[in-house]
Length: 207
View 1 (cartoon, helix red, strand yellow):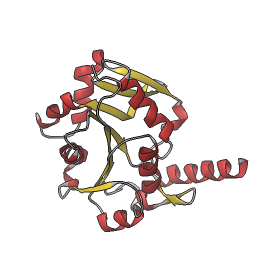
View 2 (view 1 turned 45 degrees about the vertical axis):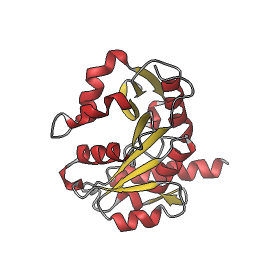
View 3 (view 1 turned 45 degrees about the horizontal axis):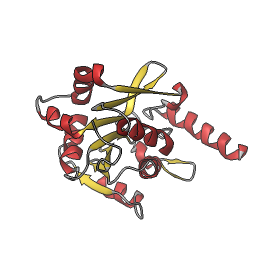
View 4 (view 1 turned 60 degrees about the vertical axis):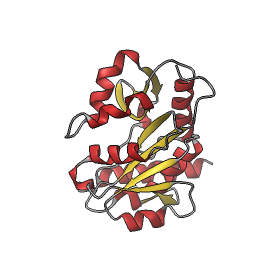
């Protein structure tokens, strides 16, 4: 059981993909005055993750520029075209030895807030669970927390779905947190971006 005073919980932001469905790098698009990538990483930092590791691949130089001034550590994944599992492994390999666990986030989920990340970490520290999963109206999606004891399981098989396999293997031991279903928004298509632009514009006007 991880005690309340256990070591830091690292963050792994997966940001190496090619955005093939959108036709341009979606992580560099602007939402609410900052890039999608910067917003996600900032929320990870505000959620208390230390360190925040950002796995880069496609257009890595531009991504680094977008992260200027943020307290995060870029991690290069030269094999990013081989799939998200390679990025996940690269991130886990960079987690410092003193970290008790790691929270994995997808860079294209800009509605995941720092408060949501912090809730995941609190659930881990208050439980004996090696795994904390997020549920959005019955759909599981990041942020997902893996205790260090699970890291080695990501090396067991090649191919995609490493994180999902680990979750399925340990689901009975997991703590689950419910978040609002409307926070689950992937940015994959042009229509997704237009909806998010409208949402951020509405939020700005209501303030």
